[in-house]
Length: 185
Length: 220
Image (cartoon, rainbow over all chains, first blue to last red; front, side, top):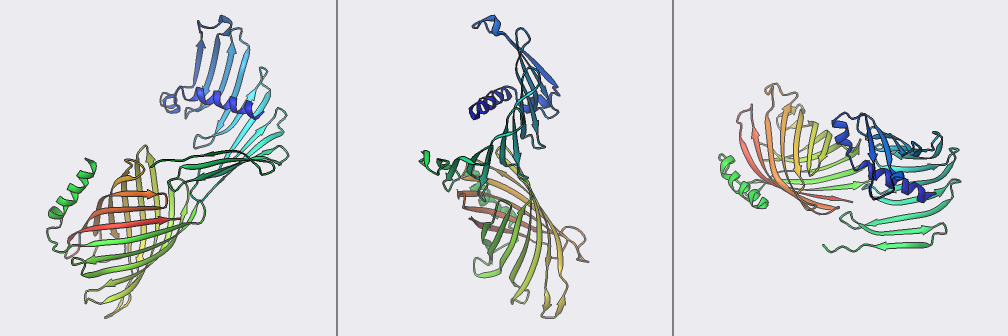
């Protein structure tokens, strides 16, 4: 399930960076329709992508259609005042929710919580982010829907603010992954 | 090339601006900041100001206060400063000062624009010939910093002093211009070295002084 969410986010960000938010907002663009035809692929794979933007150029809705107008992908996005994405909703062809991600930021604009919901809006997973006094992310704790820790990622930094070590612990606090960064200054 | 320009400025500025000044003036300070959490920090500053080519102490102070980060751009701090200051009779006297700063800073790519508005009260209390009322000032500073890389950051600042309760001075009575650079050793230690032109106005005498300053910043 988590992999699905990651793939989803990756595909969204890939689109988002093809046309910058500022470019969209500066030109007062309300929506965009992309017709995609690729000679290297079968014509049945032609797509039509409809994207709607808010006044700040954020993508608020993205619908991807196949050649026969079947909905392949349908996403809705919400943002806070600082244009940080606070919600992503994935819908099926009928407009019913498949999944939903809610992101919480604190007043300093730092992500503190990520909530992953299923089709029936029950909590599937959540990620809690912890920071030190210098606003460096020091931990990311992954819980299941019942609030039981599944894994914990710990970050350490050198005195120039660069990541020094990333360690992932499993539910039993056993190290399952470690990456050490050594910089030559 | 860029470093060379700064050295050139320092070399030329002393002859251009400090024409009525015969001595070398300098200021050294150490600013310590303890981050209590992401919003709150405690600060302590120790500084000394030397005149007459390091032969005389103009003033020294110890400062303590708290800083609160309102948002990523705005911050507020309240401080108490205890001065040891040389008076006109060449005696050193103690004066407390209280001030509140409202800070703003905004980064645009490598450029950072900052502004500080300060309200300060300088308390003279009993002086040798009686009692002197506190003097209140509004000080407003604008600064521009350019980050060349993690280590080097040249900057320029302008600050105006507006007296709030001085019957003889109705408008601003001092402007300070700073030009210098900041060198960051690491996230916990940096140093600022700058040249200051301190221009007094609307008072008699209105002098212009040149000052070289070094501020050390330690945070943990």
